[in-house]
Image (cartoon, rainbow, N blue to C red; front, top):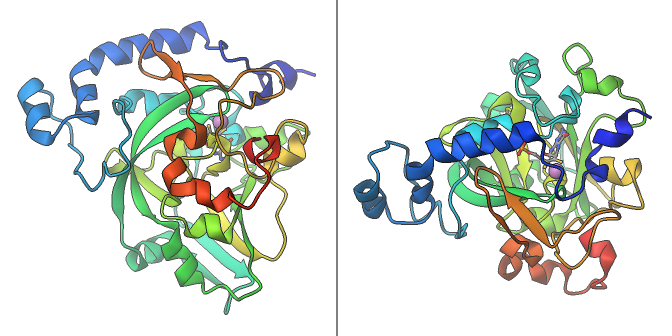
Length: 317
Ligand SMILES: Nc1nc2c(c(=O)[nH]1)N[C@H]1C(S)=C(S)[C@@H](COP(=O)(O)O)O[C@H]1N2
Ligand SMILES: [Mo]
C-alpha cells in the first residue's frame, strides 16, 4: 500500500527528509537574531538585534515557552494537513483552500443550534496572543505565537446544555481543492474531540492568526484548535462544525489506527508510539534535539484534568 511509507504513524523520530533539514538550517541562519526574541524582554531583544519583528508582550509570553520562537518561514512551510497531501510540503497546494465565505455550525447539546460566519464570530470574542510550544507525535516541535481566543469563550457563546459532556470538532472536506480526501482508508472529514473540562481549561485555545497575521491556509485558516499539551494531531484545522455531544467521540486517528492513537493523546515522553520513541523531539528551525516533557511542559495547567483517570498508556496515546 503506497501510503504506508509516508503515513504519520510510520515515521520514526529520525525521519527528517534531506529537504527539510536543509530548509531548517537556512531558515535558522536567517533568523538567528530574531529567534532571540523568544526569550528576553523587548528592551533586551532590540538591544541585541537590529531585525524588526513584532515583539511579544509579557501577557503573550505568560505560558513561558522556554525556547526561541520558531522562524515564521519554518512554521509556514513545514506542515501536516493531510487533506492537501501526505508530505510536509503542502503549503503551495493549500493555497487553494477557499476562505470566503466561511461559516461554522455549532449544534448538538446546545440551547439553540446556530451557524455563524467566521467574521461574525470574531466580533463576539476577545482576541489575544499566546506563545505556545507545539509537539507533533512525529517527534518534532515548534514554538508559535498564535492569535486567537480562549476556547471557553466559544463554549459560553454556544450555551451547551447539562447533557453536553464532550465536544466534537470537524474540519472542512472540500473535494474540489483537497486531493488528500481521495486517499482511501482515512475516515474523512478530519475530526477530533475534547471533554468539556478540557475545553474550559485555560490553555485550550482557538487559533485565528499567527505571527500577527491571519492564519496561513496551510496552518488551518481561518480557524483551528490549539491544544499545546496534546500531540499536534488533536489540533484540528480549518474547522466548520463544532458539536456538543453526550458520549466520547471517536477521532480521526483513533479510527484510522486504534492500536496507535486514542482519544486523549496527551504528550508523555515515557510512552512510545507503537514503532518509535516519544522521548525526544527535533526543534524545527534549529539543529537541536531535546528531551520531551510530560504534558509538553504544561502539567501545572492540565494535570488536574486527568487526576481521576488511570495514569496509563491510554491517557498518552
Ligand atoms: N484538518 C486537519 N487538521 C490537522 C491535521 C490534518 O492533517 N488535517 N494535521 C494535524 C497534525 S498531525 C499536526 S502536527 C498539526 C500541524 O499543524 P501545523 O502544520 O500548523 O504546524 O495539525 C493537526 N491538524
Ligand atoms: Mo502531528
